[in-house]
Length: 383
Ligand SMILES: Nc1nc2c(c(=O)[nH]1)N[C@H]1C(S)=C(S)[C@@H](COP(=O)(O)O)O[C@H]1N2
Ligand SMILES: [Mo]
View 1 (spheres, helix red, strand yellow):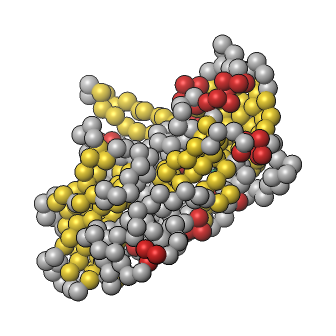
View 2: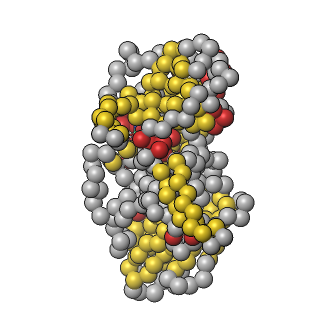
View 3: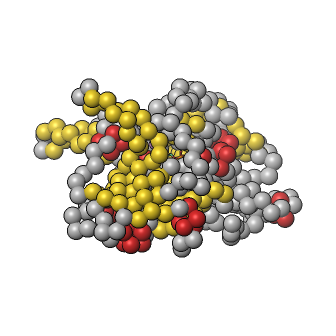
């Protein structure tokens, strides 16, 4: 793969040892690190993952040391089974309300125009539970654009929704009627036609790992994880709204709002990513401390950090590794850290001036379900 990364240079501009000479693409990332630093472990470590069958390999924030998450450290979520697919016999079907139903082999998709996107994939449930704070990772995804394929299929005039089906299946029950269904998620036709969407077969230069959707998945940059359907084998255009489990039951945000003194309930399907940031780790080097974190979900203008009840301080944003849909690393030097326990909170501000909401912001306080938990994250550390 192309590794147009700059040399392994710390934020101060010093080349660290001889590492720059080693051709190891995922070591060679800029990251706000200092030679000889050690990580000060968080006091509030997340509890053990209670759902190892469905959720794997969560990011361990304090071990974060690269902009790109290596494939073997990338989290994975499978709500049904974890299909192992034979790429030789697998095909992608495109049909429904289309003039020309199409089918593609993996080789045929790989022969089409190739595009890459560096995109931070976050599960919308991330930070919804104390144990679930590592459902996030950033990869360079490669594939072929979706929109030209829908154009070739010829969406009929009444086609309004595009459903992406995975090969994984599970039992669903509606009014005591049990059915075996494939994982499915839909998008409005206009959203599906976005030039950003890729039919993705590669992750960080390697074929998609099985856990991340081999041989093909949708990559929908700017959308929460759930939209990025893995083990994709059928794309279906329909004239009516798709109301499958992962659109209309799970991954539904229920929020209380006050409108003119009345309580109004807003119940929405999880959709686009939201502005967010989190402290990743605190490091110590020669007795001085530094707070390092990430911000994502919207174009980031700045990140601010608060220690205990102190003032919000502007963090430095890494200018070297930036991409429209990827997280931004930031850091704040903490030279005068006093011994004892401290809390660290970060908040991101996007280029439109929106601020990542505080826990008591109505948008967070009025939210009843755990999805889309983009409120400010506080961690505890002992100095
Ligand atoms: N077919 C299928 N696609 C899926 C899922 C799934 O269970 N089945 N899980 C979704 C969820 S909830 C998330 S957060 C992302 C996670 O992608 P990853 O496993 O590659 O990290 O995949 C999404 N795509
Ligand atoms: Mo998810």
